Image (cartoon, rainbow, N blue to C red; front, side, top):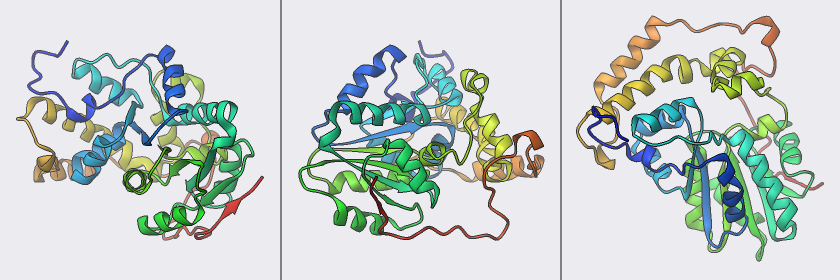
Length: 307
């Protein structure tokens, strides 16, 4: 039931495919038997914020065939819009389940692609995620056009491509939509964020207590304060501002779905009021941290790994 003070439904929240955990087996079977290019994505607080700032990102999310709820922020957004949030289906847990189901049930008919992160994490994560099966891999620092050309040159006719996009938002969502237009036939395009890094154990997953209480974001912020400060310390207040604006404001078209000047001012005020952490607690230090002024480089296009 919609709250009495809500004047309009949030179109991005209404786009979500909400389901109970018991219904996920049916979804996995559907994804194992696609007949056309299908995009699977995950909407979290960070993705919601980006979609408010960029009309193109909003449109890309709107074109997804399956958009799953990820995190406590979107759970609250569902409740605000009168929807039962149901199960939390984050990519870090759901994607390995999906790949495992594909390999066990339909191993010979699929061709695997991994696009994202950098070496050695690309190779380590891909081998773990695809359980040692052959795959094509490329780092996450190429242009959209370069990815499309790379995919065309490696795709095998007669095989169903399963493409894991792990270069982060909003680039992976744009590439998924472009690939969907490119492919004539069945395909599975999965927006996975940091899934290859997690599979490679580059970054640790949050302890079970954090994940069960919806506080995985807090653990990640402690682990990577510099990289994730804006996403959470600044992004969470903005997220609630966007939710309130979209719920209480006048209806907006997709063309009008963008940030206005007062929201930029709010972001500056939040940043000036809160100072970022410089280091996580010593007991939680783990993984690679980019140094100030450092540029990340990948191995370039053309990496193809066989078991």
